[in-house]
Image (cartoon, rainbow, N blue to C red; front, side, top):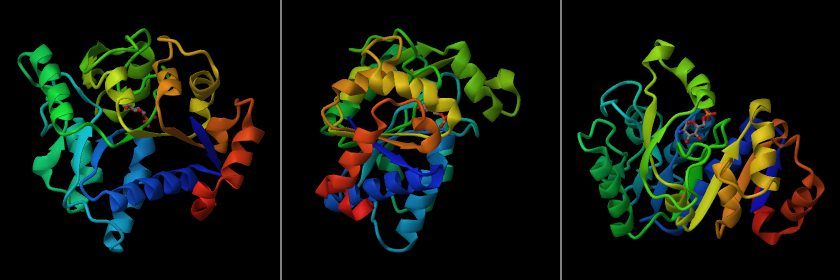
Length: 261
Ligand code: GLP
């Protein structure tokens, strides 16, 4: 894991947007793994700005989203498909036919999970995975005690996640209690992953995920096993990290990061 700490949420999102755009420029037919959540909104805004400035072309990209709520149709305004249309797909030149979000309305949810996993595999796998983190420590919707070897599956959401996400629904009780999510193993199979966390509310869980033991109680800790994972934080989310000086020193001395300093 490489840990990069930026002075505020805007600077952290800016770095993630630039890393993403660079990955697309290096491989125009990139398979993107995409995340939702409030933290990502500003990243997508910044990517769209770069698109409008002619710095990136999505025409050859394809994408797979991490997750979708069970019971929400794609056209439901609270679905993650709607979120993606609003924050990214409707604003850039990605071919919507090449964008994938699990179908939360599928009659046979197990079959949908298998179809999604196979579809990722037959696309050649995810090249570049964007990630947020829930206060429960989830990546995607892999709640505590999810198998660290899991593929796409249906997960029951924890109280912490319901508290975190239900304010985003018109009425809190409208939030579904289950979701389809890429598994921890699906995420670990991506070639490169970038996790963004900002704000005080993420400080405790980031310290556990980054510097704590690898354990199913904090599924984000499995990223310690990812072959190339970058964790981008703002000062607030980084405040409980113990090896801060080391992370800063690496960022300030590695040639790879020179263009972003
Ligand atoms: C949802 C998504 C997660 C995401 C999390 C972060 O729960 N399923 O993939 O990491 O939101 O949410 P926020 O950015 O709003 O804190």
